[in-house]
Length: 479
Image 1 (cartoon, helix red, strand yellow):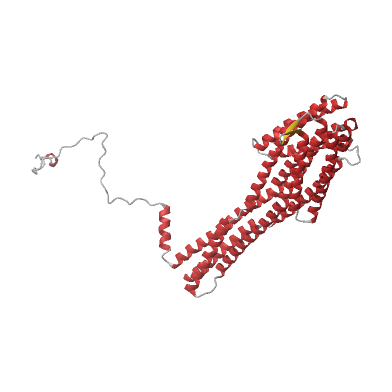
Image 2 (cartoon, one colour; image 1 turned 90 degrees about the vertical axis):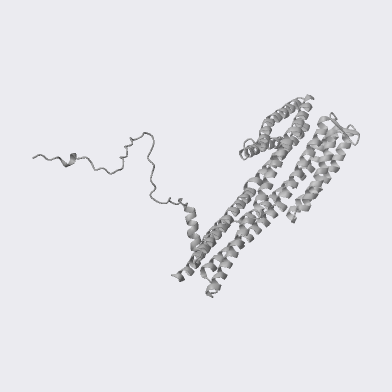
């Protein structure tokens, strides 16, 4: 028998037409079928941290943790700002004592050395073959001092600054001036009148180019000194305000603890308050004492030094003009009040008046007998100088050149050179005294800041630790 296979039979009819197969299409992905609702956007760590903090702040332990963190941060910030601001002021005070004031003094010495060299050169020219070795040595010493001080000033000036340019100019002019002086001296010793022209050219180079540059350098260094003083004396307001804020926050936290626990003192918070108060008091008192010392060093040191430097420069310029009256012999004139007079005679009168005014001011600024005595001695010598100069001027105006020369360079019994030397010696003594006063007062002012930045930082860390431990003690009661 034969059977028909089951698999070969036709499928039963269902009445539904079959769905034709769709061939796969290139480049068109099949649509994704969503498995569920879309996932929420991912939140940042900051947002999650803020939510946790907000949730923790709704409970008392959470609030205590926030308060402890804020107190510690505030105390640490107070210590850090105190250390930063006091470090800046201590550095500025150091600069006043060891940098800017010595550089200002060096700039004044450059001016004085140049002016004194010019005075010695004219004195030596007048003496001619009778020039004393001391006069020549003084000239050489002044030139060496000026050159040495210029090297120091150049090493401490910023490249390309106004001071650096002035120093370079002085370095260029110094050998030119010295060459003119040597030429004048050589011609004078051989009896050639042209030596006087060379000396007047040297004096013009000094008076019109070198001394004005030295004076501007001195003013620049004085400006740096005043800037350092201002930085050292500025009150640390930010640190003080942070200290007051930290004390207020600690007082509020202790009151809050007291109201909730009836405990009068929290040892940790009390420790933080004490350390903060100590730092704040140390800050205010230390800076006040430092400022008082710096003020004293300026009022009784720097101001007196400035006036005495002016007095010494005026005396040197007056002496140079007095000598040049005899060197030029009326070759240079100027008008004063409509009258034609010798230019160097008019210069002497101007500088001697300036010397008198500076000595009067220096006497008022001197704060002790040791400072007033040399100023008074300089004033007495200046009055004698004026009287003797009047006699020399009278001899010169009457045509008695030799007598006038003797009254100026020392051949007579009462030369003006002795008066000038007395004025210069007294001013050197006064300058040395005021310099010592400055150093002592500035050192005292700087000493008041010693250890304050480091001490403030250490105490602030202890205060922050006390605040954290105090709050931690309170938190332990909830465990």
